[in-house]
Structure formats: structure tokens, C-alpha cells
Length: 150
Image (cartoon, rainbow, N blue to C red; front, side, top):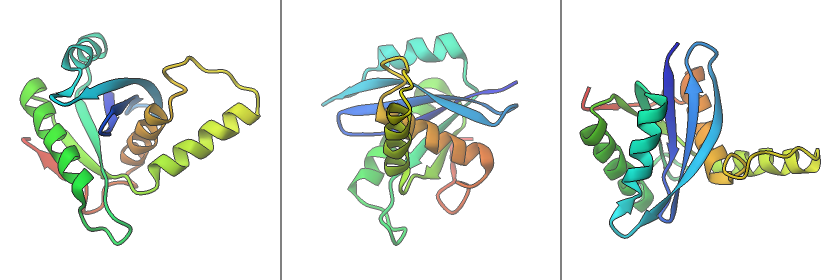
């Protein structure tokens, strides 16, 4: 069984999801605050130590026509820092529409009366789960799926 992390990189919060390659499933895990000097690395260090992921999947925000945008640079910088810090394979997944899908899932769960743990209920963590599910299913492995480092 292989543990995989997914990330939805934002300017204030980064959503983190955990997935399993055996079951090809993912779920939102938590959100990590992002400050001027980057994400809360001590929190990410703790998550990596606890879960021992072997691959890191980063959502690459592209425009509707597939071009890169300013947020793409932030995601690429974060991915490079992940690879340098953890020496794990890092892959990109096209994250177009992942936030909208996460918001729809969140709204549906609330409408159904489902309660989730506070961190897992975060739309950012849910968006990370959507990104990770795309990678696990192979749907996100278009031109945006490129490894860094490995």
C-alpha cells in the first residue's frame, strides 16, 4: 500500500489530502497556513513524519485555455521546495475546476446533514482531495503531469 499526499496551493492556505494507491481513494486531511515566507513547514514536516507519503501531488493552476498564470509559479515554487525538503517524487496535476468541484461536494455534504471533522471539511482540503483523485485515476496526467527531481 502506498500513501500519497495531494496539495491545493493557495496564497493564504494550502489544502492537504491523503490518498492510497491501492484503493485509488483520497480524502481531505487538513489545511496548512501560508505566510509571507511560505507554508508552515513544521506542520508539513509533522504530517510527512506521521503518514510517510512516497509521492507528492501538487495541483497546477492553469487558465481555462491551459496556459500558466501567476498562481502557477507559486505552485511550481512550492513543488520545488517539497522535492528539495523531502527528496520525494513530486508530480503536477491540472487543477482546473477542482475548487468548484470541492465546493459542490462540501455543499452536498452539508445539505445531506453530514458532519465531518473541522479540518477535513475545509474546501481547500477537499480541493486537494479532488486533485489527488485525478492523479490516482490517471485523469490528471495530461501535459501538466510532470515530475520534478525524479
